[in-house]
Amino acid sequence: MRGTETGSAMTQPSRFKQSDITRAIKAAEAAGMHVGRIEIDPNGRIILHAVSAPGTVMFQRENSWDDLLR
View 1 (spheres, rainbow, N blue to C red):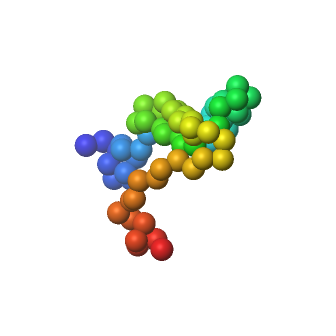
View 2 (view 1 turned 45 degrees about the vertical axis):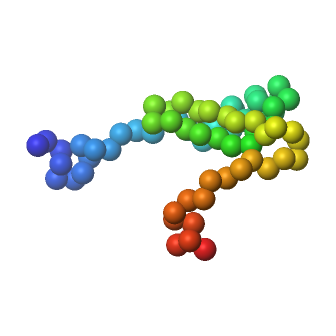
């Protein structure tokens, strides 16, 4: 098992950068979309979800870690 001593065998470079997300949001907003939620899939694909109307807050699922972080 090569490279497992330092743990580097399991490390992969990120498939997206902060600038990719920022660029996607700015492009969507320039097109008139009101971004409500962002998803990033394991392949690095960025998915923007629009709010139904300006000023509307998207439904947020309860996360089991929320209680620990409060």
